Length: 389
Image (cartoon, rainbow, N blue to C red; front, top):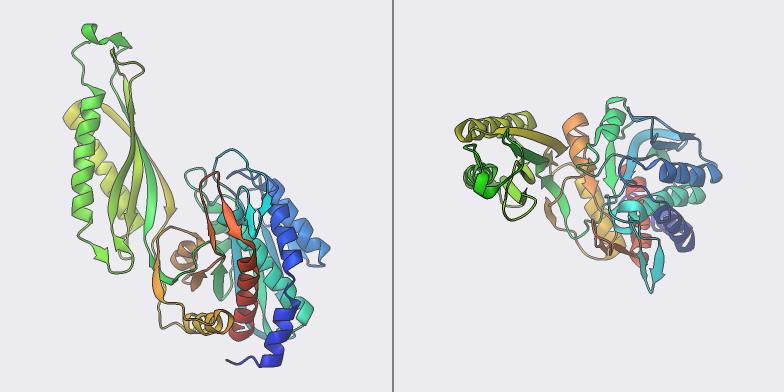
């Protein structure tokens, strides 16, 4: 490592666990469903402004909740390391923050307000220790991450506007592997309709059954899933088409007018989102014609696929720093979910590593994050900056 022991210890000593927890508690305490994250982004901007940073508020094509960006530079030129986090949460009832032992609970504590607070603390520690000799930090936070309520377009707009570093750290709750590959995906909703009015099943007209059409669609999508599963990666798994919900009818003996299905389609690097989209829509159109029903499909892109070269220097730097901070090695692996790293790779070919605190309960009412592990992440991010920039 290029950083000497004295410099490293100075940065570690500058990490303040109480300050970190206070900021995480503040962020978790502000409700921020996807599309409605303005208040929490304002809260983060206030935290950073109070610390003396010049805070930018780029809209990222979503003025309802302007993003947050802070740039902090050393005296000498060098590379820029970006810390990026989303502050929106899934659309579940709000759970206020609470501390239980060494856990912080509440909406967004796991996904991913507390991790973002750890990234903020890394920035504060680097500044307080005056340890960064060259380069700089770009810290960003945004809305519109969680699908299907958001589609990632705010971050995409920031990347296209050049608000991007030379490498990115993303404090999502993955921490057992260093992910170098991840599947892309979209969520899908299909609505099947027949033209007639609601009617008792004994009086049903000679119209197609939307349930039978739904069953045929399930059959065809299951066949597609089997076909897709042939393409697989040893780390990331197989391409897939998943059916998660099917609904029809109001009561047991009314001939239903509508049948609705929902699920996901996931693909590996090498498959284009546009091709997956067109393939799915063709299949829907074919089944609609065959069953004599009307089918409409609503597809929402989560993210495109993700790939990171394990031989990239940023990977070896991060692994070395992880070894120093955690006293153990971090194996190479895959990312099970779509996150912002997918966008950085697809849109800017910028290396992005997802690594956050030990946490759980994401997308549930029981989110939690390890308070001690937040400090570890802050130190990890700060030391990575010293080595990379």
